Image 1: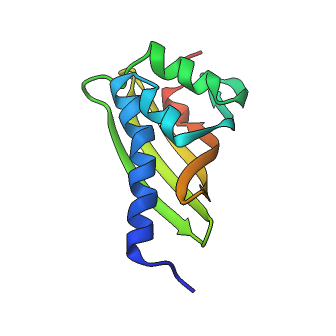
Image 2: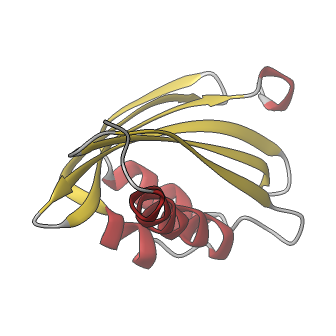
Length: 127
């Protein structure tokens, strides 16, 4: 059975914490979204990042989205306690485009992110 639209809106609102942190260069909002045990996987400028979500917080806190940063949130799927969100990012730090996938679980009535995997668009990789 498909969830109500209100549940999709709740998932989108949760994912917007991620976008706000990236745009502002402040991990404060993302820390509200991710669990302490959340994991990160992806390649940044050709180098594999994996492990604790703390690496993402470090990246966000050291590079703001910038004035030309743009993002879009697509709620891909919502089940009773599971959601998948795709976030398209353009111009992070003035040069990088990403596609992020966030895996969220509904925990104690709140949508929390447990994993982030991403792709950096190849035409923005700096070698």
